[in-house]
Length: 72
Image (cartoon, rainbow, N blue to C red; front, top):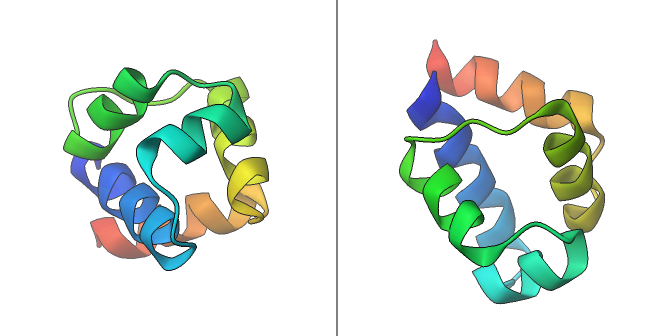
């Protein structure tokens, strides 16, 4: 499941043509933490999930759904 979130986050970011720095600036989440999320060792808090989803223009529930699909 940890790896699934990272894969979904990176895919969404890449689809929007955003760098980690761009996403960090738009979400208020540190670039190094975004990198750790994408690599899999870290998981976001609910607040961080909402910030990232908002910056990506995706409802948080869609992110969770995609993670569930990726993990299965």
